[in-house]
Length: 223
Image (cartoon, rainbow, N blue to C red; front, top):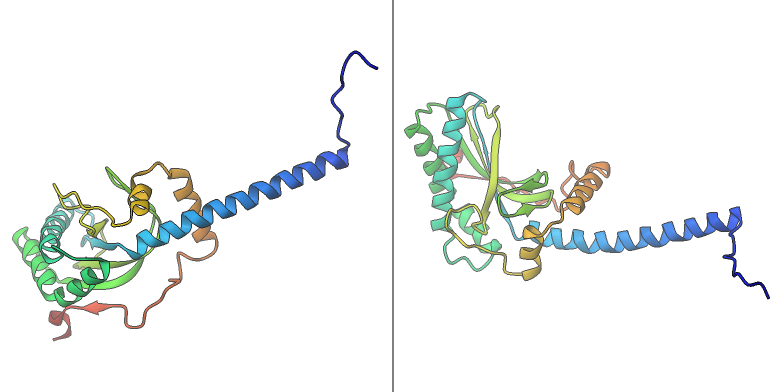
């Protein structure tokens, strides 16, 4: 009997088979893990109403006007969605209150010196992964209140109308603990992988849940 035990060496074929098996196990684990992660991201997207404000241009004046409109809309939305029991109720209130929201945006823009048209409507949009000061929202398709100022060729601003995560001093949260944990957790790598996968598969170009007549406009625009 040898005094020393020698670790058996794998043949080249054995090493290749071992590497392939390990790679397969890793792929299966990643697929399962990312599948659960994507499902949770889908819940967050479904339970969120975004806000997207596009400035007329990138001039300092137009960017200032954009921020004034943003502040006014966030404040009005906080009043409009007070005591909402869920995102579906928030979307119904937003659709019914589009006239009020457009007047709010137009008045804020005019007060800041803007003389161009203001368009406000509900739609479905693709958003990239977005990091805010205290939370991160995953990339994907969201219901959104979109605001276009003038020719809307400038930099945009986006946040969340419901839950009121962007309302100063508001401690709004998602109802499901898993959703809240997702947006405040450290998942930068997974968020990046998810967004890359969406772009590689064209999911950023086509809404996986299209809705008929998904653009609701205010009564002012329809008149």
